[in-house]
Image 1 (cartoon, helix red, strand yellow):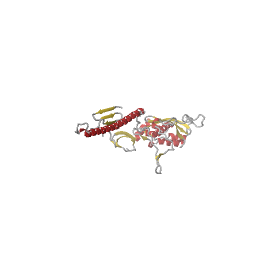
Image 2 (cartoon, helix red, strand yellow):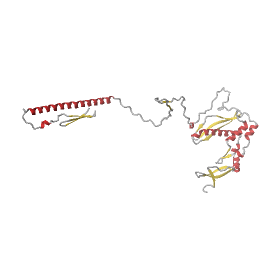
Image 3 (cartoon, helix red, strand yellow):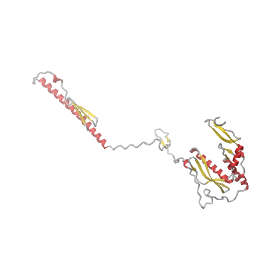
Image 4 (tube, helix red, strand yellow):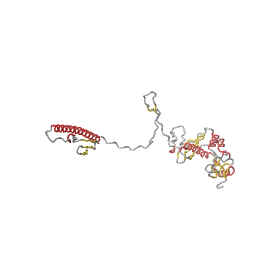
Length: 334
């Protein structure tokens, strides 16, 4: 403990730095008024002698009492300061501050709490009996749809690997007639870039006429592959219990939310490619038929977007009309 002391003629100031206390003590007695009176200088004068002795005794008693009181206060302050310093030295060091966790990290919603109906009770959190649900899978990493592999001794054909019935016999004349029938011109559509196509639903109608509903089907030959912009998968076309054709379908997507729809479009694209082996709508891949059809049923024109005012050239059927948001215009810069 460090103590600073300032002394003057009649008082003493002590300041403790550790206990942050101070004390003032008066070391001399205040002068009595009787001492300054002009009394006879005779020492034998009883009046002067008695008064001088009594005033000196009273001053001595007062000084002793004040000094004892001040010393007690200073001693108590010193003891308190020493006790505080000892406790601070014996206290364990404060643990290091842990870094702040990021806000909303690993956020998990809390179950709603159930409040008791009677007064004086506290609400307790509700315990859910349902198991926690797994997060939704990220479809951009692909589908977990690998075909089931059957045992070697199974009586059922494993269409994920088997080529059972491929090219064993021709179909009946009725089925072949339905498959090879020419496509009516009214069923063929034209894309804006000038490519002609047959809607996928019409391929299914042709297969239903040839084999009957339930007489044909598509079996996946592998898992679905999702790339950065497209979905692809291989399928096998089965008809009357036989493998007919294999093809890989593909379909583009523009956002992860459209991946399931693209997977369905991939299946339809594979069906269209498998039907080529059966001769269904084979004229759509014939260049001479394409040029003749476009000359007789197609037209090329300029259109303008109603919102952006951008113009471009498109193809469409002659019996079709320009639909919103496009409108027909004369051309670039006109």
